[in-house]
Amino acid sequence: MKILGIGGLPAEGSAVLIRDGQIVAAIDESKVSRRRESKSAPEAAIRECLRLSQLTPADVDAVALARPFPQSDLPLELRSQFPNARIVLVEHHHAHAASAYYASPFEDATVLTLDRMGDLRCGSKWSGHADTLTLESESFYPDSLGDLYSRVTALLGFTPGADEHKVQWLSTSGTPEYAELFRDISGAGPNVGPNMDRSFLDSQGGFSAKFYSALGLPDRAPIPEAKRANIAASVQTSVTETALALAGTGTNLCLAGGLAYNALLIAAFEQSGRFEHVFVQPAAGNSGTSLGAALSVLGKHADAGSYCLGPSFSQEEIKQVLENCKLSFRYLQTTDQVVAIALDALAENKIVAWMQGRMEYGPRALGNRSILASPLDPYSTENLNTYIKHRESFRKFAASVPEELA
Image (cartoon, rainbow, N blue to C red; front, side):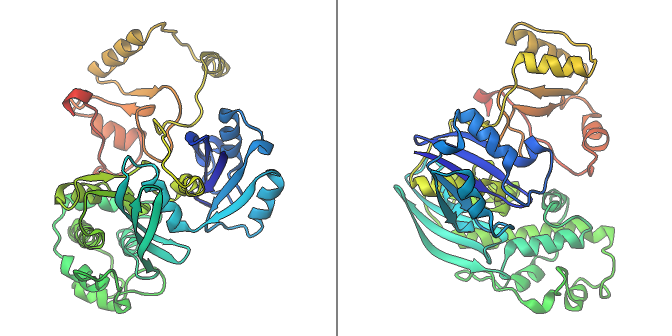
């Protein structure tokens, strides 16, 4: 069985290839085409999946397409492109749930999906047992925790749909002074999901005069710097409380949807004691719906082994690029030499661009495409945030430690 999964359109298009129950390729379109938006099928990612799997379009048995997709005739185009494949349309949150459960190590789990909106839904709760996913409850837009978080993202001057992670990290320097306000907005209770009080919201993706009044501000007034971190901490606290209540309790929990990228939310689940084990695969957002669509057609767990499932580059390909760019280079013959050179550079407070093996699936660096800096360097945070990544000073970094000490 050879299944091609397509999802994440238009902004997070991706493709996944499952062959004989094994996930053999998973690629984000933007990483190979260098374009974020993809109105049609993610052609570059599909080509790479087929190449890595050594398949032709005629070899594919099924094409699983996660909804929604912006081009109404896309299923017909795929049927023409893959003449021997059946075309399967998979509901958005079903794809999210499948991407979490069927990629997990669990035979039994609660599965929770939370995002802004997909197929008019913004959340769902499932029961996973063996190879079966059963829907227990769902939330419909606009009763959306993701939408509330996006509105706060815009309120604080960031770009909604792209910069929610900035609100997350800004929240770490604030106190939840307005948590009760956001509890009132979400309308969630101990056994009740979000039921947004629309009187606090406007129709343009922002907030009403009633909300500004609760903050002690005139309608549409700029948010004072002194309030920004506290507002971020308040929405983070309220959303976390509601998500914990939605999940309930159990042994194993799988999470997917855009809110599963919120590291502080995941940490709260891990530390709450409500579940013994928490699983999030690294393409938990919309790009991961290609994986979920393919897994839903497979209908059972599949082993990825690693989530570095994109293209890799041979020594000759790398050498050709360096020569074309007229860059000088050294060729190191052993891994020990490469590691030693990297360690020497870090010890000198230099910053290292590190590339090895196959490209990661999803937006996170997992060690194959990473920027490395020494935590002993007092200027590393400034150099990384200001001069390399061009981002805010409050943004955080992942720490790397020996596996035996983790």
